[in-house]
Length: 350
Image 1 (tube, rainbow, N blue to C red):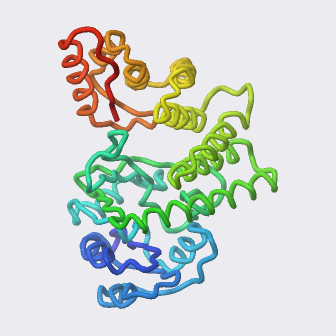
Image 2 (cartoon, rainbow, N blue to C red; image 1 turned 90 degrees about the horizontal axis):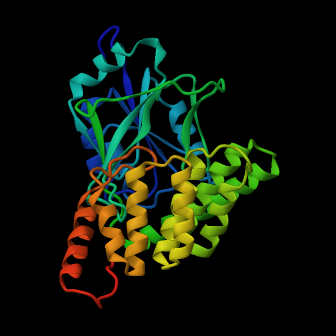
């Protein structure tokens, strides 16, 4: 590494990732000065692949905590900055821009948010890209959270974060193709979320932390196919701190409840929750989209059409752009139905 040039580690925790790890390590190698791979119990060729890629290897017993494993891997890094990766991610960008970009940030930045795109295209909500804190200073930062872990400053101060330009580096998330793997991951995450939630409640953690854990638990239970348990957890997330102004955790918990209600065609419940979301300051056009879906389920095409016509951009609660194609498709279906004349009921949308 050049004198005075910020150095970067790629840091991964892995287990049985032989199908994706080789592509991940090959893509990140031009961007970093070292690769650290921490294995949590692989029984396949994962470690051989990492060794062939020139990674520094270590292992740690799996302790039902992603943060614990990531902190073990982090402790083995030797550089100024750390890029945290998952084995099913690959890296795009301009390798020789990364170090100058980090140097230009000065000492006032602890971490950078990196854009992650989904290789398979938009998900069921229309989300094809989002940002996460994936690049941070090696010292002064640690991971917390059994699952949905996140980096924080060890001195308790807020993490000072900026956005890494997409021309410099972005990640592509490929995900799991095997439905059995997907189901096992969802079940594991739900179990870990439940453990973390119970621990936070038992230790009297801050209400905001309990609410965040309840949101994660609700999301995980929904992903594992248990909407009833998901609803219970999401309602807990909304009511941990009664009387306080709604925060992002509350907004997301409400959003998930709306989506569950829509999936179950409980339009009255969805309508009431959408009203709460709108009153709390959620993006207007996003609320219009939710309202339009509710009206379509009721078969009220005439009321849904003006809402769909009024959506020119679709941005979710975290500021992520959603695919407008779903809006265009819904609008086209409504127009086609209305042209057929009265007596036709309902339009199904995603």
